[in-house]
Image (cartoon, rainbow, N blue to C red; front, top):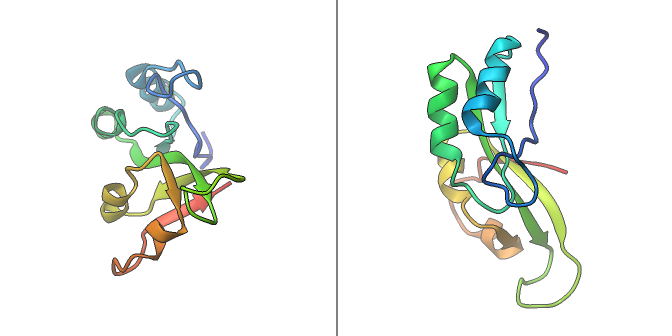
Length: 120
């Protein structure tokens, strides 16, 4: 397989969005010779640890992420929201990426840098 990596993948933990079981998903990626795979469940990160372990067991680089709702204003204000996918670029990002809905204030907090990569 080439260097293609799926960066927007929903599992059984994304209610109404995904049906793939993590072991089957990672098993198929290994069968296809993929070197890395992302998990970006919608608003939850319940599958992050099983995904991480399954990837490590099969020699695949796990990329942990989450699809969240984002608004440029405050989450308390009604208005438009955007769906965005965030991918951790290191283990510190995995700790911060645990909210299903977010606003600019979350990302403006001092943290020594925000190790996330946004992907629309």
